[in-house]
Image (cartoon, rainbow, N blue to C red):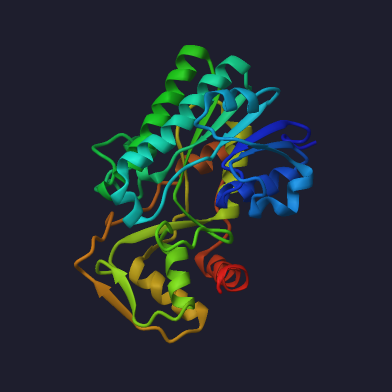
Length: 322
């Protein structure tokens, strides 16, 4: 029997991009899954709705978090409010508020309900602009978070502090993972909120030519495919019990310029690229040290960009493009 079989598992953020893939995996593992949702009919969960318990409500309401944690064994806390560079830079206070309230409510309720274990999803956005590359977990509280992710980065840092203090004072078992840039089917393609891969895929597939890219294209990023993130989260929940952060990412680093060119090639378009150097580059480099994940979780991502990007392009053209 696998670890999750017949376990009562709550997944906050379950209707979202990464959360829905996690729910799919847990259903296949025969877990008894509950998902809180502000949507009565979440699109991404449609194929598994008959196999899960969907509860409508808002995690910012402490009475709702009390309700949803009744009779649960394990909690994956993925619920988050975040966007791309433009959105994050313009809404630091909103991001701080919208991400912290649900976490405060959830941890308080979990302590009272005797939850066996919580997996808290933090973010690579906790790291400062000028961090060591590849970045070790020890630099998560070094300097300030990257300025273009300031509010979101601080919300995740504070969430980690909350996790550690609840573990210290109340003995709550909490695991912390820090995923790097996620991508895959079901990503957010909204131009006001999307991250770099879905934003580029949409604009290239929609025929923008020339493709205007913010900055000079030199910043690098490390992207991890959504099913790999899910595998890392499942391993962390099963194998860890302490709030000692673990990076979930790849060692495959690519510049924004080369990423745009690769998507153009895979989408089979003849799009030209133009760089708008009046706009910010964001963090110069982002790539993580994966030593801890390999050692503690025996986890290494399987999907390369050349394998994952065609799936995103296919998904966009089949399910999103109008």
